[in-house]
Structures are given as structure tokens and as C-alpha cells.
Amino acid sequence: QVQVAESGGGLVQAGGSLRLSCVASGSISSIRAMAWYRQAPGKQRELVATISSGGSTNYADSVKGRFTISRANGDNTMYLQMNSLKPEDTAVYYCNADAGYYSPIRRYWGQGTQVTVSS
Image (cartoon, helix red, strand yellow):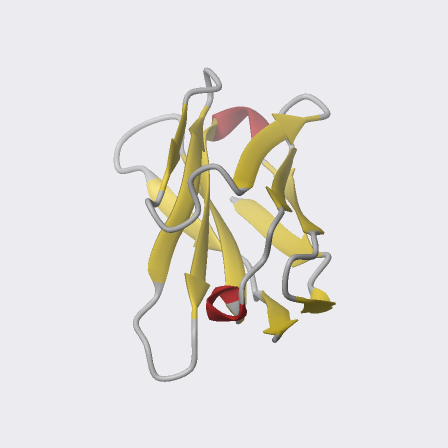
């Protein structure tokens, strides 16, 4: 079992920055990949960025060049550095972890943290 919890959301003006954190606990050594998703009001949840256990990263086109995903502290903490924020980045941001020593791999979600970007 793995638990993940996000923090760091808030209200920021357009052009500003925020750093989100996601702390994992439980069977940390079983974590394979982690990711950030977001869901804006009235829209489907969408992928923002992913990071593998080896450190490979992937970003949605809408955030490339502005957001940076990283892992630290023995890989139990994941960050999302968000720069040059836009009003359209306003959403609830969720982290998840894909974990498991054997198949099937399970996906664990946090409760989300609100990010609001004012124009």
C-alpha cells in the first residue's frame, strides 16, 4: 500500500510561480512512476507531467517549458515547479503513484490541491 499527499497550492497572479509537493508513504520501494494530473471545473482530468523511477520525464504540450517535475528524498517526494502561470492553469492538481512489487500495478491518488491563477 502507498499513500500520497499533495501540498503547495494557492492563489497566484498570472506570470507567477508555485511549487507543488507530493509526499509518498508506505511501500515506497514499490513505487515505479509518479505523475501530476489536473482537473479544471467542468473538464476532464488531464495529465500534466510524469516521472519514472529512472528519472525520465514527460510533459503535456500545454506546460512544456513552464513546468518542471522532479523527485527527491530517496524518491518519496515529488515536486512540480510551475512558472509563468496562466489563468488556464487554474485547476485542482493531483499526484499519483504507480506501485507494486508484482502485477497488477496499482495507481494511488492523493486528495488534490487547488491552484488558482488570477488574471
